[in-house]
Image (cartoon, rainbow, N blue to C red; front, side, top):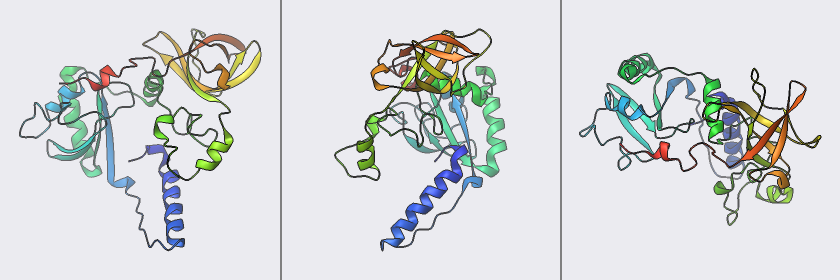
Length: 271
């Protein structure tokens, strides 16, 4: 499973790994791009479980989607109507939700059934821009924005995914690089008619100390939100910054990671 916009990037990396494996006598690995064979819907929100319950086929449809049988960050093969689905309990929005990976030839049928089941629950389609705003409220890093070649995993705040007791590709140069900057989430008292997009300068007393990598508007906080990189000494919660937009400086403050629902209670809710 991969981000839809990065198929070519991931395929290139996998093929290079396979070539390295073969070159060291490891044998042959076949890699096939099956992108066009699978579709995926992201269903999220407080009523997502109720919507799926209307479609799921199981000996006990009332519990199949519960935390006990289908915990957060797990995957299960389920059936929604007549559609076999690889369902992953994860959402990029900070709400209860699932990714529904399905055979592409059954996509239209599944879409229609989901919209029908969701009608009484107020199900609506949302755009990628809205989803981008929501994931910043959870400080979810995005590949190509916060994640890429400009920062190491430790600079990106992915410490929990790095086990320094093990050897892995890139470990030595990562440690040699050190911590040049840190990824932070900021809330911004910006203009009423403009939101940041990313790449805006972050300033302290007129000095450039970093830049935004993502930006948008937080409905939960009623103000602009952004993610970006600043000097390590300025990455503490409560640090005052300014963001350059429309040739002006606007006040901003560093907040804790996942400022919206930091305990993930909405994601883990049972039912």
